[in-house]
Image 1 (tube, rainbow over the protein chains, first blue to last red):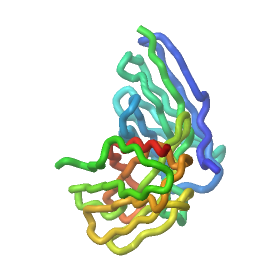
Image 2 (cartoon, helix red, strand yellow):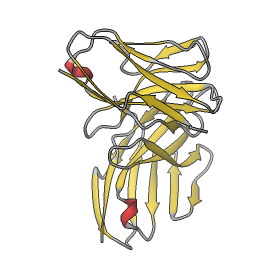
Image 3 (cartoon, rainbow over the protein chains, first blue to last red):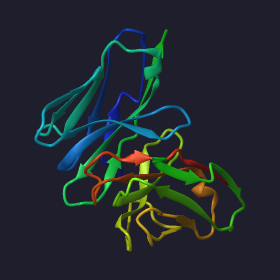
Image 4 (cartoon, rainbow over the protein chains, first blue to last red):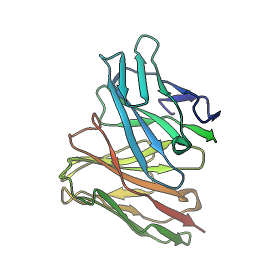
Length: 111
Length: 114
């Protein structure tokens, strides 16, 4: 079964608005990563947050991690049409050499 | 650097045929892995390798074999293709001997099994 559960499955907003996606997981992790996938393409790494970090920023991206709730959120501020893509969280599980992906959030930015 | 390359980009097989999906990286990464992505789904790990000569199973290994004779190459073999293996296959690599760091993905191979 999938380690990560993402919410919502789909999100449609107007250009310029902020987009927030959430990821929940089940077991203790080393880190949590967020990836973007444009239609028909491979995944591109966005940001990594380690288990001892609570918040991280990269440009218009802000990621939070709450290990007590086993959840993370990805905030994209001032969205652009080019942000239209699917976004996946992935967890690196303690004691395992595996990266486990969630099912993703499909984000659509309307002009 | 070319990064992670995958061939072919698209393949059609008949049930029972075998084939090898190629994956290569030129970043001297230790960790390599294969995923499959089905419509509306995330990626599921098939096999992974923490270095040359070392491979292990992921979440959905049945029907697939891998080998890692060199650091650069990590081919995925379908032994006897089945329609359930219709999917998009992604290869990924990372610098460390585990997935603790950024994964670099190839562009994917679309496989259709009839």
